[in-house]
Image (cartoon, rainbow, N blue to C red; front, top):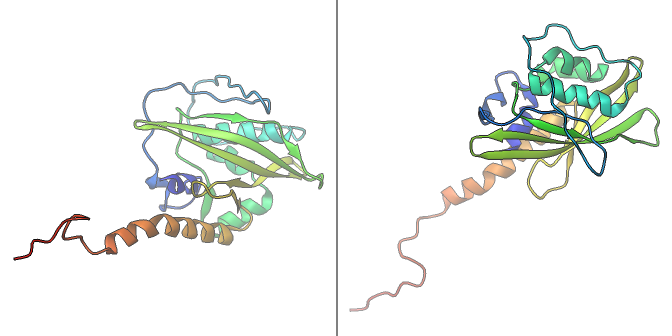
Length: 216
């Protein structure tokens, strides 16, 4: 389900990361940075051994460049880099709750990153992206808006906004407020499970609708 895949991005240890679908063994692996109106993708180098040190991102990198490195690290399972690109407060608060912004490597995933939207507060920016994962039974695509804050070391990720439930407005998942993030997770899971529970509780129908009763 969509919500399980979403929260595998910010998963408690041994919690939701195992709920995602297994990735397909076919399909190209690509990443890229895009213009706002016509996104494009470019191939990346083959995945190497597990990285132990984060990728060095220049302090003058733009918000969309930071998100591009962040998503590529997520795609390759590069935990040191994804963690290093979070704000200092996000790293501190997530650690308190034994949470991490991480996923299993998804070499068949593709993504598009659009130009950053600078906020009135010059220390903030939003970057829209589209993430697609390929599975044996089809593709899953998510639009995610990343919230970044400028710090001494450069732009860093503070959270993300996305549609937790199909057809509902985007909700902001604040990496700097894990308690609120977990609350939204529980609410989303409850909303998905509610229809199934209601169906299971309905009494079984003994006769088909419109069936005529035979009188003797």
